[in-house]
Amino acid sequence: IAARAGAEVTVLQRGERMLPQFDPDLVGWLMEAFDGMGVDVRTRTAVTAIHRAGDIFRVEASSDAGQETFEADLVVHAAGRRPALDKLDLSAAEVAVEHGRVKLNEYLQSITNPAIYAAGDAALVGPPLTPVSSHDAKVVAANLLEGNHAKPNYTGVPSVAFTSPPIAAVGMSEVEARESGLRVRIKSERTSDWFTARREAEQVYGYKTMVEEETGRILGAHLIGPHVDEVINVFALAIRHGLTADDLKSTMFAYPTGASDIGYML
Image (tube, rainbow, N blue to C red):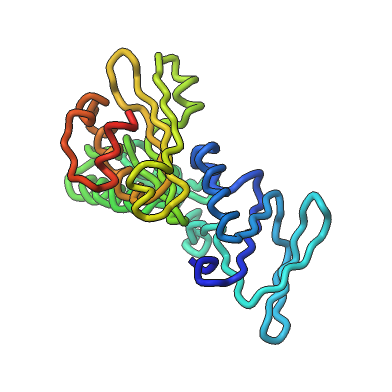
């Protein structure tokens, strides 16, 4: 957004690539979009210090090229957060913690103190996403009120990065699908010439889907482009409830919408 508004944007990424939880091919297409907007992405670059000098910030970073300094009017920290458990003194209540999260059983109950339950980022299970926290909270509430009987179900949890354009994923990655032992049909295409992209003048639009050959069950979907932040929810529904590729292909979606492209992606 800042780049499209005319700002000069530099992204410093410590890892080998941006968005490692998303499909590498689609992230590559996204980097092309970033480049077209003038966003300068520096991978394998770790921030070591930030100093304020009057009205500007100086960001010190270390990369393969050595130590570098970047000057900016605004610095945004986007490395995520950890659960703030330290001040709770959980050891006093004999609550086991591992990697900064509470160790839980299948009912989201502490394995060392049965009076304690945890949900969301404080838990050691489930992806760190907002809807997962809400899902966990319902499980915990049910078990507190009615005794342990409810278990979280993380099947088909979609994830979206609201980049320009957005990128989304649900289910297995291509690597996971290939290593699953299943016979898998993988379909991938860059579809910038489809109407969904052309009507919004978006140069980056594409997908990668994985379907089990024997059953037609959808194993994973990875999307980039206009409206994929909504369309991914249809794939999430299919994966969570066992819908097949034929089920989606035979569904009539409103046109022209992003969902009307689903049949061509399978």
